[in-house]
Length: 543
Image (cartoon, rainbow, N blue to C red; front, side, top):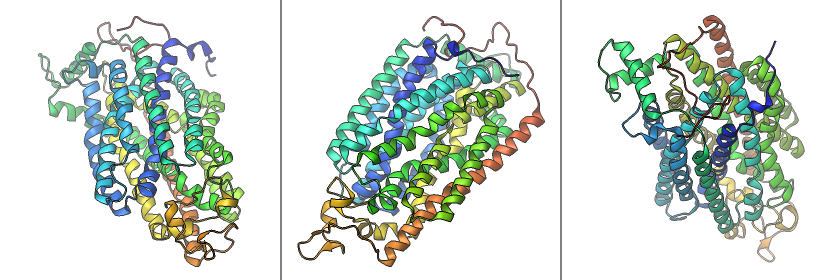
């Protein structure tokens, strides 16, 4: 029988403050993931070749960046504030928000090398600070709730705040006309970055946290002492000791299943996020269905990004009672059925394609963070119990996980762009993107990657007056038909492949969880008590 849910443990002061900081995080992450790729490819004119080089270099940087931040926060490096998660969010959060502005102000739109350099610098600086702040937030969430029910409570409130954050799309997309008015978009992005920085600073400033960074470092040192049998404190910078702890984590079967399943989920969600603004205008808006710049298109984007979180709230009780694994598998089955149905219907039914995009994004986003946060919490508990650690290495495990999962964020756009280019996207996006301005959009510029001038010189211009025709193009050249069919196939088949891969490893994780059995009860001694960053049971004094 499941425990009775106490709502008073969800809406606590500390929990509310932590999720207010999450609001700022989602503002920045959503802005970057939704708009940056389209901006650089279709507005700054970054070539696919240079894009792949940048993403490849960035993939290598992630291999150094993520575990480095984890060791700083969990093992210690002599910098006291970086081991204090509250201070990390308070100091690094506003800096991260300021650095995010680099994306939105181009150095050039004609020099491909300069545009690629701009993208590289923006990605490197943005992701470094995002990792620092994000790992601090994840560590707070896991240690805030010391059991499954406590973590579910945290995740649920986080989903509520994430739904609120999703509405930030409306002013940005509507006022900028789906990024066609770049100047207005830049103003909106700047305002959002300022608000996000203030949210993280204010939330962290008033957050109550009992943990002392120095005692955390001592706990990790004592873990190392227990391994080596040395009587004197060891240097936490000792690379061999750090690698020893890392290997203990990496070789656990449940950790391997976690990173593999989350890898496929990341491939799926990042592709949906970053290519949404390419698929929708190409497959729907150009045919007069939800025209660019219209209110209905903006509302559609909001629904795509928020319905998954709303669905997760309705799954609160099943997750609370049955756990994350059955919930993920059930959502994946529904997504497989949805993909099979749209393949049978085809891309000519625009309403059906729109519904599929909405359903796929809803199911893919539902619990994409929260459910895996619960599974990762189980892995952290397993690691602490099996290796008899005095305190949970939550941030370290999150960042080692990121070491394997973060490459999926770079591989997703590389693979997707390769698949789209195989269908002719880079070659034909200009001639195949032009549609009728008067009857299909309320903004003068209608395309999937061109400037207003390029629209007036393509094959669909009216030869009588060199302006765009006022009737919808009813028959496309064969190369356009092939392009849009290829885009449709990529839109549907990519999630299906990712869903199958994810489900296989979720099932394996269930098997290993049952094989390990119930964890031994952890009763920390007086000197090695497990601290929460901010407890849901009581409000403790601030640092």
